[in-house]
Amino acid sequence: MKYETDVVVIGAGGGGLAAAISASKAGAQVILIEREDDSGGVLNQCIHNGFGLHYFRKDLTGPEFKESLQEELEKTNVTVLKSTFVLEVTRDKKILFVNKNGINEIKTKSLVMATGARERHFNSLAIPGDRVSGIFTAGVAQKYINLQNLKPANKALILGSGDIGLIMARRLHLEGIEVEGVVEILPYPGGLERNVQQCLRDYNIPLYLSHTVTRVEGDKRLNRVYVSQVDENRNIIPNTEKIFEVDALITSVGLIPSIKPVEFVQTAPGFVTSNTNQTSEDWIFAAGNCTVVFDLVDFVAREGEKAGKYAALYAKKEYLPQELIKIKKGENINILHPSYIDPEEKSKLYIRVSKVFDKAEIVVEPLGIKIIEEEARPSEMIEISLKPFQDSKIKEIEVKAHGIS
Image (cartoon, rainbow, N blue to C red):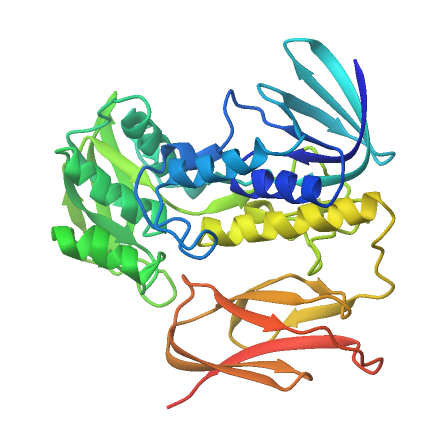
């Protein structure tokens, strides 16, 4: 079967749902593609609250956030294709996909990639030891408990203090699983401070900063994990080894943006976009964790909404930027999104500093913007809004940070 449409959205998580709704409201004909049987993505297994505070102005669980978007989607004329896997996206704006009806093709005018990110696997860490069962990514452990009602362990250690690792420490504890601690190679937590407090301190779960796993052992099933302290260069400090006798190691060691099957646009490693979510291929837009990893799904939905809007405008030939200005990372900036801006449109910059500051000044030059951030941390995104401007002399914008007393 062959389809024709204005906008295709790939991925029906928080970003994809918001993009499809927005594109439809902007007057475009939209097809939303989702590989799973249900929309929502990882939101379906995130049964804790804390979602929606920015986007909906409500404190919601992950499924409630998804349902709120789903209700909006059902008011539109968006065509939703579930259990559908995209095989290929070509430069001539054709999308090949497969589902129970066979192999099909869509001819589109614009595309929104909202494909999220995948978890970095334990095997990528090159940790020596036995290859045993009992080692799970945090997302897999979360799915086992929250969706499949399975108990993955009796006693567990968590590697990585990203938000999902912190949340899973609490979840495992509440399910009666003894959590020996959370091990983090950095000298500061990788997740939001509120999650450190609510998930670890409130339950007296130890956090081992500047520590890493050095070896795993077991006979078919994991039974021992070796942990050592590291110095500022992440080298193992002798005689600091701790041994944890556990039957599960839960890893929360980062997310990798999912860009396939679109591999002919600029990436670093996620899709490089402008403030209108446009990629290096002007008909392809991208939003959410397939660009950079956001710390809140509210930001993902906000970016999806914007991507859908501009994809629809592009499809209707109502948006095509004339000239983009590059934004570059300056001193003490680790993550900066987007990478380009159309100065005639509003912009929202998302920034992660490269180290912990008790107090930091973020500077955007040559626009002369300065903001003060209390306790700036690499784990928490800083937002800066830019108004449209017209200045032909500005060819590049730099964002930098420094500590102040």
